[in-house]
Image (cartoon, rainbow, N blue to C red; front, top):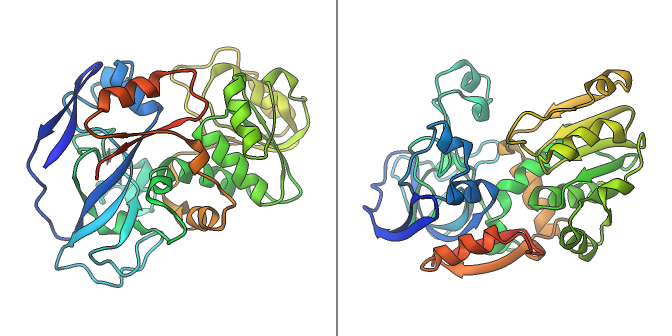
Amino acid sequence: MTALLLTGPEQVRTAEVPTPELRPGHCLVAVRYVGLCGTDLGFWDGSSNYVHDGLKNYPFVPGHEWSGQIVAVAEDIDEDIDGDGAIHGVRVGERVAGHNFRPCGTCSQCAEGRIASCPQRSEMGVLGPEPGAAAQFLHVPAHTLVRLPDEVTDQEAALLEPCSAAMHAVDRLGITATDRVAVLGGGTLGLAAAQLARARGAKVALYDPAAPARALATELGLDTDPPENAPHGTFTAVIEASGAPAAVRATPLLCAHGARVAQLGTPHHPVDGMPTAELVLRDITLHGVLSGIAHWKPLLDAVASGALRLSPLIDAVLPYDRPRDAYLRLADGGRIRPKVLLELT
């Protein structure tokens, strides 16, 4: 089969690689779209901590946000798999997406159901040897898949993996119609989190220093402003979705007494000048949010109902044989829309 290989910083090419053999408990999926994000940009330009720390090595097949269609199912799979977020009625022809975590299954974290925290885990296309989704076919455990409703397009489905983390943040904070919510960051995570919080009736404001990001937020019907206009001491819930040091430092200052915070963005380095005392003085509850494995079902419901609009987040869709153009587009800081897709079929 044909796959994309990242062979080094700013080096990508197509290659012929063996088609995976179908193992027990797995499905073979024909990949339709792969989404590219900031993690992929770090692999492209060589800045990724995964590379610097030896957790991912070139060459490898990238891609951890994807959608596709099942083309083969292992004989041992029950056609009525039923679990938290698992697909129902696994069969050839189903349109699917899925999460990218591959835990060891034997450690204490796995035993308690926290597979995203498994210290021996690999993450498809990101961490460890597991190849990514930027290939004609993807070999995946059936229990990691979700069936796509008819209302969710294949392109939208390629955004589900990152947006599941935004759904996790909103669920973790228990957002309701009584909340005043600040979302910091107008990328994929922030725009998804803001829409999901609004769908619960909360009063939501999104803050981003970039005019294009604010323009897209306005297009989605969100209230938006530059960060310097965010009122301090006002919000009952804050979702930091950028990982930018300035946003992380500002988060406690925006909180009302007793507020809840979801740290959804990932800073690449320690954040100096964090006003940690404000967490105590304002009695703030701080949640670190990793992935969203258990949150795909409400996420799919939100997309299918139109409460979460994902198509406006897509900037460009490029064929798989133009990967360099896709990465260069991803690196273009002037983009209005955050997501770049590769079309595999």
